Length: 132
Image 1 (cartoon, one colour):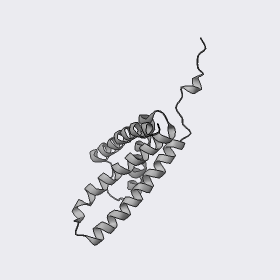
Image 2 (tube, rainbow, N blue to C red):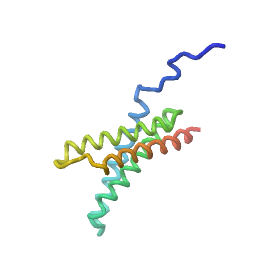
Image 3 (cartoon, rainbow, N blue to C red):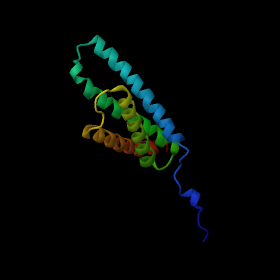
Image 4 (cartoon, rainbow, N blue to C red):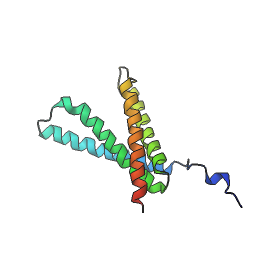
């Protein structure tokens, strides 16, 4: 019985599916921010809802990006989706460190980052099955 080489068991660290998913996530986030800006400018949506709207839009962006990353990878959807969600969360948190002058790390930030990773894993499971 011939065994497979160890390289076949290693995950794909070239980053292309994750990079593809991150680009799709940021394009989705940018488009949704533009739509939200127009909606808030033309309607009477209160700015108090902006935090909740941003939270939901980030999750939708991670979901779309992780689905596309896993679809491109073709296997290990939860892995590539979760990695895409975690990468997106880390980048957003690092951008928050640059932009926000107050404390950025809190339990809410940790919870949001973990939730993005879980949403990414879920989106990856959906995305890998869209390929078939």
